[in-house]
Every structure is written in C-alpha cells, then in structure tokens.
Length: 534
Image (cartoon, rainbow, N blue to C red; front, side, top):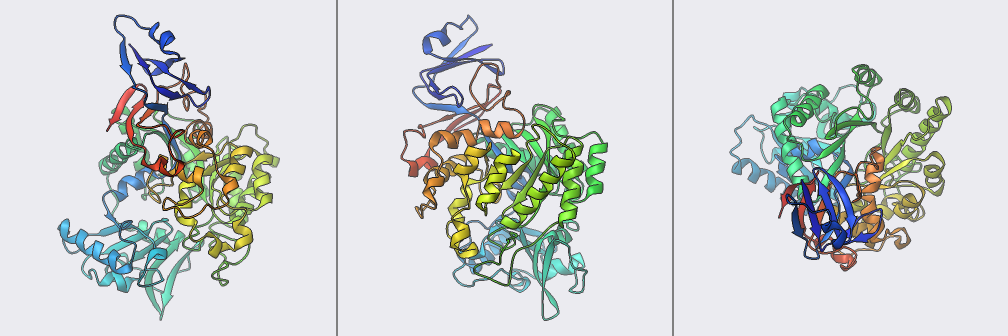
C-alpha cells in the first residue's frame, strides 16, 4: 500500500527541502513535488495533507540508557526536587506515602544534583536519608548516574562495612570509621550486585514504558547502554529478543554492549554476538567501556587537578594496560568500540588504546568512538580526524554544565571544551541525551546546540562552536545512522530508506532559536506506521 504525503515543509536531511513524499509499505518510495508524488497514486493509495507542517527523518539518540530510563520511571523522581537537600528528603517521604511502600521494601530515587542545593553544598549521606526512614532501605542516584547514596538500613541489608577492600576505579566514603553512604563509579557495583534483581518480564515492562516515552519526543532509533543495568546481562538480551519477536519494539535499538571484564567480553563474543548481529529492531553495536566519571561529581579524569578542588583529578576506571587489552581484543575481533570520556586525561588514554590496536590490527571503517567528548584540548580534537573517530556528543549537557565548567576545569581548558562544531566538521558527530541523565528531549538538545546557551538563557558559551539548525538536525538523524553503520538504511527521507519520520508543529528553521525547545511533536512514524500522535 502507498501513502502519499503532500503540502509539507519536508527537510529530507540529505537532499534539502521538498513538499511531498511517498511511503510504500515500510519504505520511502519518493520525495519531491506534490505533482510527482500524486502520480504514484493508485486506487488503494491514501493521500494525507500535511497542511504545511514540518517533517524530517525520525530522531536518533546516539547515546542513552533505555533500560535505565524505564527503570527510573518507576522510581522517585528527584530531578524536580533539587533546589535543596530538604526538598529531596521531602520528595522521598511523599513517594513512600503515596505508593504505600511497606517497611522493609526498597525505595529508590534518581535525579538529585547537589550543585543546585541551597541549604547544603555537599552530597547527601546515609544520615540524611535516615531522616526519611530507618525501616526502608533507600538508595538515591545522582542525576549523572556516577554517585549513589544509601541509608543505614540499605547498608545493613547489603552487609557493607567500612573495612571492605578498596574498589579499583571506584570510591566509597568512610568518615569516623563508618561508611557515610556515598559510593562513586565502580563502587556502585557493591550496591547494584546485591539489590533484588527483576525478572525478564519485569525488564520487558520497563523497556516498553521507555520506548513509548521516547516516541513522544520523535525518537525512532536509539543507541543504548543497557547490559550492565542488572546483574545478568543475558536476561536483558532475552527481554529484547522476546519484545522483538512479539512486535513490541517501537524503537530501533543499537546496543552499546557494556562490559567491565575481559572474560565477560570473550564469553559474549564466543556466544556469537558482535557488532551488526541482530535484526532491524535490535542489533548489537559496539563494546561500550567507561573510562572515567562525571564533571558534576568531580570524577571525570583530568590531566591536571580540578580548579575548584586541587586535591582531586578524578577517577581512573581502568589502568592503561587494562584499557588497551579490552580495546584490542574487541577491535581485533571485528567489534566496534565506544568509550565514555568526560575528562581530558581519559581521552588521552582512549586515544592511546585506539592508536595501539589500529597499529597492531589495522582496520578500515572501524567507526570507533568517544562518548561525551566534553573536556578536550586542541591536540585531542586533532586525533578525531586523524583516527577517524566517531564523536558521540550531548549538546543538552550545556544546559547545566555552562554553570560549572569554568569553575571546575579553569578558563584555559574550558575554552577548548564542548567543541561540537569542530567535532562535527572533523568527524561524524552524532547527538544524544545520555538519558536518564537528561530527558531525551531532542528539540531541547537542538536548541542548546544552536544557541550554546542554557535553556534559561545563560551563555553563550564559546559561540563559535554552535551548530546551525541544519547541522543540529543532521546530528540527530543521519550522523546517528552513520554511528551504527546504517546510513544507507535510515536517517534521511529518500527512496529506499526506512520510512521513519517525525511531524513537528513548526519548522526549527523558522522558529526563534531560543524557542526551538517549545516546538511540539505532533506525530512519530516508524517504518511508515504511526507510533505516536499528540
């Protein structure tokens, strides 16, 4: 069956603008003029008048955490309670009361950010959470996902003690010979490995909930780090497999397969998984590694001490030898690699690992990349072009980081960071949200990319690193498709590609740059099928 869409403002991404397009079954058949589109009509065709609405290719979030997003949708939402620590505690109390959570049952929350606290200027501790309850085990995760705080009941149930062996690539805080409840980076595994694990059916429910939420933002594809969320990654793979077989996937997902140990990676590859294996709706992507932490938590690995805390340089998750070994094994076995890096020292380590493996085992079109690419120097940016690295940027991070970046890293380093325009010009820079660190709000991310300001108007921060509207859309469409080796299958409106597209109330090209975030998503289509309508 053919569906003919006419009278639209259609940005095709690769071929400029047109006014009409034709969808046959699950693919675009034609994009061009109204007159020519209507010539494709037959007796069974449907004709839809777009009434001058803006249409472009379906949005592709090139780095997020879909399962974790679904998981957090069932938690206490602390993102709206970050003006003070007391607000966070009150939000948790309300959550327990509203949901009638029995004593002894776990209470989880996510989204707090101590940088916004007006009453204290520190992380929460176990003793703060004890004011909420000493009978419920409570854990709350910072917005960045790199710091977690437990109350005394949780520490007791998990059997955690201050004399535990130090965690490589992580920290837990001990004050006066007692755990104060704060855990960072790899030390989070002390918690996650012991809390009750969900069933495959429960994982599926979380995923479906996340899929539908993503569709409301116009997202049709996501590149997602999911396998480390729960203890058994095989349960997560099974959940995706079953949803795919049940035709319940409303997102085309490219799995950024996160492992921390070489033995687990070897097991994964030996089981037949590798980059590109899977179906249209669920496909294995790169090996995902975490090289450091976050800027907000001061765990991003810096080459020099933090300007606002000279006692810290961040957290190094892997030694250079460990990182080299993981990268080399994956790359030499044909697997793409994508590594989290926020600090410039971690970027140095990643570049060394990539240079080493590509010298030992040369590959063309490897599409290895760096996720986040936040604190950079000119020599690091040069390496993106030299090594043909994929840059996975998150322009939405400017909304918060504008407030802290110069204080954290100093003026000189701040002036060469968040260099999105440079990265766009020298590599295939794809955009994303790192959801649930931020909401997967593509239009908000576009606004930050174009204005280089926070959504409250603070900035601009290094305005010559702004993307124009066309580049911002490309970063959320065709460049995301390139990151998953699928630029010939999706990411633009042209004949032969999947009919994934989004209908917006207004054109981002004609909207005030500071109001792009307010544009309404009217409908989202996946393979020609409407999966969301406002």
